[in-house]
Length: 172
Image (cartoon, rainbow, N blue to C red):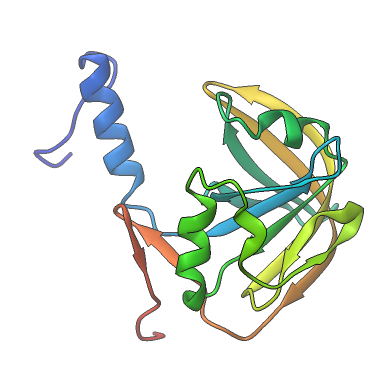
């Protein structure tokens, strides 16, 4: 181990949480806006980087949401959701959907995907999903979706690492 290692089992809870968050931040992720429709048909969306592939056969993806999120009820009842993988040019939309602003969908070119889930034009990729199941895990809820439609655009994705937005560098 390096000299910055911390034993999470013996550290003070605040120190352990801070160390885990910092260390997880070393892993570069893509940035997504995940969307659905609530029970009243209103669009709901949020910025997330907790997205990943789960299975190719059947085609499944996974993402997680804080159990205390005000959007949990909407995603919990939604039959469909969309994972909009942001392009480098969509940093402002990522910030907007990570904020408490009320009309998040006032910016961006939005269309209706499967089950009415909002789909953003100009993304690096879109995964339209039927909700398969959700599962409580720690302080988050995991959502598993069956991918029913995909779209991709040959543009560079937006990345997040170390608490900052990043852009792709040289391809090796």
